[in-house]
Length: 362
Ligand code: NAD
Ligand code: IPM
Ligand code: MN
Image (cartoon, rainbow, N blue to C red; front, side):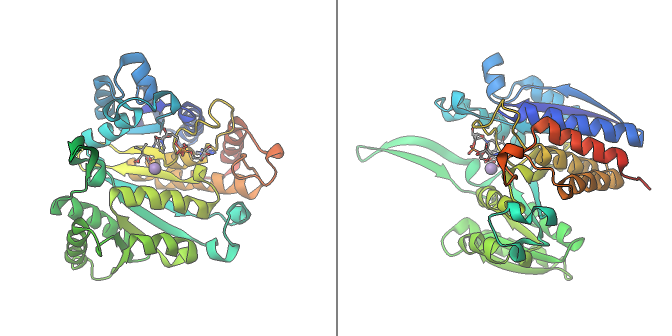
């Protein structure tokens, strides 16, 4: 198989984790006889510095003619004082919108060897396997108006949370489709006791559920969900939710695995190739120090192999390699009990590559 991948390293630890992940993908390519080629594009702060624009048109064009996109992270203190529409984050939001990447899949799977890395008790987190399906191109992130206005002699700021029925329908349907091939349970998370958009969300979820008689649907308020994720995470299968709720709940859920540096994601579109990225940000506090955990990005490539290219065996082999290095005790600083014995980004990457070379493929 020949595939062309657009690589958008971005800012902070973005370049460190994407270059690690590509080294691993090259090994998969060699072992299984696939040719993966890469073309880099600018996004985020680095794009602002070089072009004045967080999302240059060439980057969108590059993504549109590629078979998949790998992204590192965007943002950092250097650009924090810029107005909203010029910030690095606007580059990522603009790309999600331009490519209609409406379905953000964030799987949360715990590794038994990592139970002590989590702040939670092992009996709570052992065997967790859930999928957060986050709506990614609507909701309060994109609603209009969004502005500052003067009212009653005072400055006000406005953000708007709006959803159309069709936007809700397609993301909830995606959640049900995933649940159908998993454990057949959808938890639709909203704030229907307060928000009108959530009440529409519930109605649509009920309608979609009729097409999936084998899948059970429960509704849960988002504040309760935040608590249940810590209390009894094994009770969840697929969580489907609004853009900002999904953003917050997924960072919270990452701690079930032990670190934000473990969680991968896939952002899927009906019309374009998918974008694969770790859920974490540019981690300015550790950027450039070789401390970043590359596993979230490596696992995002495993999602690319599975969801974009249909290469299930390759994806499985990569997951197994990650599992093996963790079982053998490999830890970057975010996971290590004793940070002075932690592996660097490159050392962790080398461990994954070594594990790939001893994994059997049939
Ligand atoms: P962050 O995710 O960058 O970092 C939060 C904490 O987790 C930090 O202590 C960081 O060191 C740690 N961490 C994150 N990823 C790690 C990894 N792979 N290995 C080890 N430790 C890791 O969130 P933040 O500090 O709130 O945001 C920093 C910047 O990143 C902001 O500009 C924000 O807008 C941006 N951001 C971008 C994305 C993205 O590009 N998708 C996502 C989230 C935040
Ligand atoms: C994420 C990030 C982004 C989001 C930011 C950087 C715009 O937090 O991918 O989770 O909020 O979607
Ligand atoms: Mn986030």
